[in-house]
Length: 495
Picture: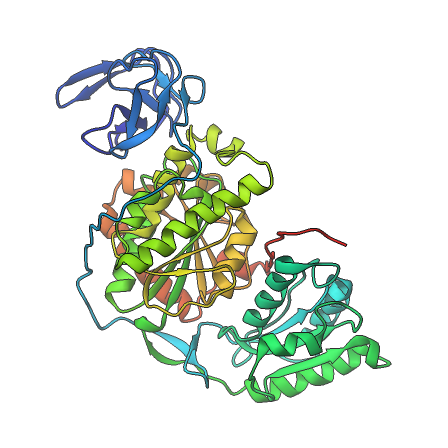
């Protein structure tokens, strides 16, 4: 295993790949550096003297400015490095497009839906319109699993809980209605029971305008206030869906039918070196097959946004990306919040010092393909290839946003670990082997091998093949544990 990595030839810092002791001599092509203090795994050290106010370079780009003079061999972190980012900016389109080499032949075993989309799971979902019926929904889930066999055909019966659907106004209420309608139509669902209370703002009659046309044999509605025994009536309706869905079977589907969301959380200093580049290389492989990936968490594009803008397929897409970035900055400003209130305490502990540092690592997940589409929150994906989605960095909110935009699967990279999952299979990809070994019950794939025994290309190919297996029915760890959550983006006042 390497002791350290200098990511780009222009970098003025390197990253420790394992704990390095004070006094260690680090050999470089143009000389050596003797460490003047202990350097933790994932943390940075200076390769040259850096003057106060001068830029610190990592990934070949500026990750901030030196707060004080930094000497060669010193630890570089939040104590001597500060963000150099501004607020709302103007941008110029300077395209640098790298078209993927088209490939064919990859496939998975999925469920072909009547509307032409493809699912990778065949589950019955119970979807509350309002938080008031959350507990009822969970009770119905438990009883339905006892009454109806899950396994082949119908693979699971799941109730999704959320606190919204009432006492909301304006865009905040629109978000809830749009998201619920998107979930109703998700291709991983064999059928959905929409469970309403009856007096909520986003009641079933109101939601019908958002849901639009639907399959009456697979989408059912129940207003709890309208029946004497809501649980028994719900079980009857689920039985009708079950009879329709139990004979569904997987068929061979081209990899071009896959839509994969990409998200990171609890990042560390190795995330931008191992896990995120592995996902980026995976994205390029899938796009080469005609598939689709979606990248989100807009605040964690700040500082690296021009790299994405210059990969936009045309001027219109560039302008949408500029709006995506600046609209999110204005969202912070409207609420009197600091735009660059990032990275998190866990990120800093893992070696990430500034938002530029974090963003340049995060955007590695996008690979090298052109940006083909830009999606508003709750908007379903239309363009194959790489898409950018408007959503915050919060793990549950962003992962839910990826799913409702059409992702059948979310790739979630992490250097710290997390057990959560959204409404679709949520694959945890560790940035380091220590995490993969320590939290084997959470982690599905170890990208830490990139700095140990395998190349990025080998690891990306392994990940691609693993994704095809998961798309064909193999369960990820959180899914096997029965973890399923949704979180809707809250943007307004509550009455």
